[in-house]
Image (tube, rainbow, N blue to C red; front, side, top):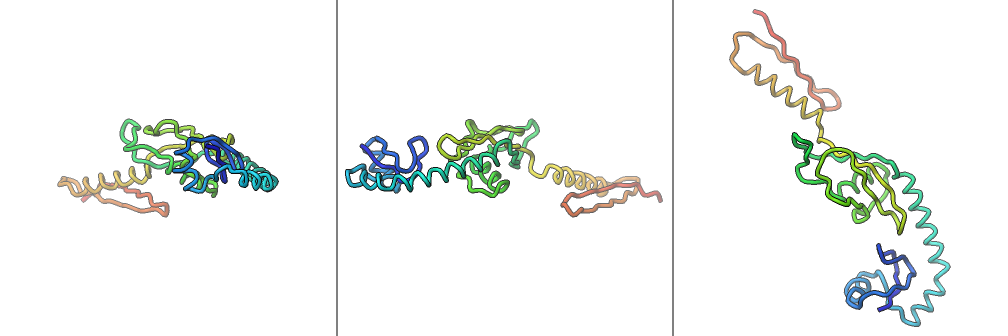
Length: 195
């Protein structure tokens, strides 16, 4: 069944393209979701009249995608996750998490369906991720997957250890000096007090 696309459809074509698809796909998805109209004589005639406007919009979309590609290529974004002892993640990094991190870094709308992870990210480290921007225009982003607030966790562990030492019965007296800095890290110092 021949249809005329009204907007870009990944893997099929862009606005104004006449494509041949299965009848069920056309009736159940493309036509109902507003992605396409039937390729009737009247619609094809209207398409010919609109070709100039479609070409202008296509040029604009390509220029915008190229500009975004320049921003995204070699960009490093950080995704915080819970990491176990061996560097394994509890769960995995999803395309939604990557899209949100990219949006925060470049202040641009990135659809989660355009983020191509390939395989799930389940290990901490640096992972290259492809973002399909428009048709064949793709950018590669470096995603750094790391421990959530690793420094804060270490500082809290140190403070808890100091409190455990202070609360344990001992022959010696100890003094705990704990401070919370502006960035949220906790510093604790344990000193012996002589009687």
